[in-house]
Length: 287
Image (cartoon, rainbow, N blue to C red; front, side, top):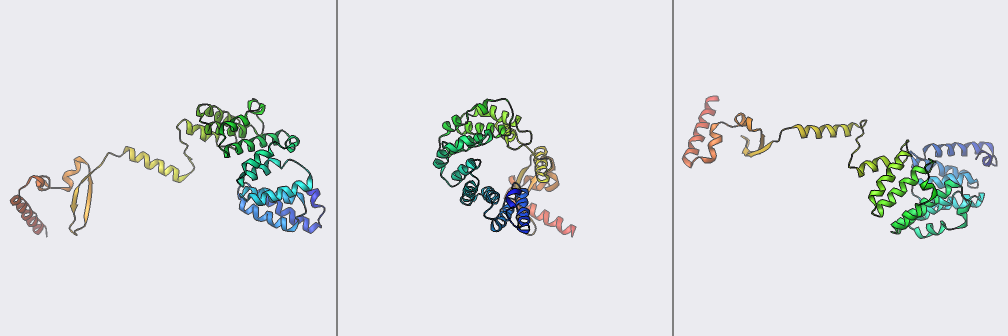
């Protein structure tokens, strides 16, 4: 990239380099910001292949697949390299053209890819099969020496994870569990969510101990389980005339009702009048 930028005046080259550095720093965490920096670099040096490539990846990460494909094609024309072929095929998937992506998997350019590129192309082809509803074919597409190998390579976790997902889609969940476990073993840095998918299959649930809201929710659930069951009492009416419902423990009934309250349902009309008169008399005495 430095070599390519030497074709520019030094001040311009420095400006372009600064923008490319920001694209690299922000691409994974803040792709929209990375995209903005890539557009500045592209405006300053559209004839530099590395700038077109960086702009392509920024567009790709923000799902601007048409723009990404344009930039990748331009970079490929400038360099003659085939290493962008898999991501170009994935852009075709993003544009809703899985048949085109699948056709690209059979082109001569694939033979020019290194091992990592060939694995990436296999992943894209399997994804295209899945997009077309050909789930069994996606499983077969991913079956390869790289998948069967016990050695762990940079692509191993993603390949195993994609195979497990393809098995799920093909209604082969029992086999998928084994491959999610293998993907988790090959992914100590958590680049995939294989561990979470494995736990999901096993019926487990992860709680982030560092998330205050998650911890609070968990405490509320535990408190709810420990709290004795409370039953709604009959509707009552306050002195102000507003409806209210009192929730009571069995042993706390006397706290809210006097004996007259507890017998009121069985009282006759005359007895109800007497109870009301007694209450009114007690209220006047208190006043």
